[in-house]
Amino acid sequence: DIVMTQSPDSLAVSLGERATINCKSSQSILYNSNNKNYLTWYQQKPGQPPKLLIYWASTRESGVPDRFSGSGSGTEFTLTISSLQAEDVAVYYCQQYYTTPLTFGGGTKVEIK
Amino acid sequence: EVQLVESGGDLIEPGGSLRLSCATSGFTFSTFSMNWVRQAPGKGLEWLSYISGSGNTIYYADSVKGRFTISRDNAKSSLYFQMSFLRPEDTAVYYCVSPPSSGANFRLDYWGQGTLVTVSP
Image 1 (cartoon, each protein chain N blue to C red):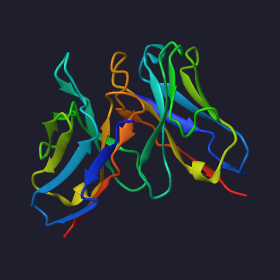
Image 2: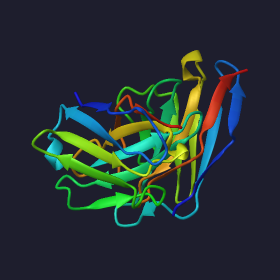
Image 3: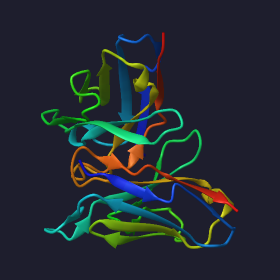
């Protein structure tokens, strides 16, 4: 199974400041035939299902604010919130869809400092 | 607009059985693979099972293999999850999840609101 490891577990950032979340996979999730990384980022707020933010590691879902960006390739990935807003308080998960079992990182809780 | 509505969650005793349903609309259900994902209270996300559009290809997580069965009825645009030999650690919100298109098999883009299963004496 591909193990997804997120860091940190929690993060407190001042409004307007940058938040950075890391995600590592235990093996490469870059598919050589199409040069795509099979990685997704989700945002989950209390009492709600996860919301898709980023797919293919760096493609922003329609309607997602451009302060959210994804980067990385192979086994190391990053979700960046360039200027944290109050509505961004949530838990963020990475997930690989390279192969089954599909696996998620443990989550990173983002709060306001 | 894609809509996924889960139902069937309940309080059930250990060792019992339960069948979850997911009613779908807004897309050509028979051409889309589907998944079940769960989230224990206060915990992270756990993928459980995948079924192809035809129903011919099925995958399970080890944690539920042999106890849970995924199925679908394309005529009713519905997904099911038969859960047997339930354990307290199966207590979770269960989500029905679909990809964005018929070809994006393992993407988990659209999520229902979830249905709560509580396994307790």
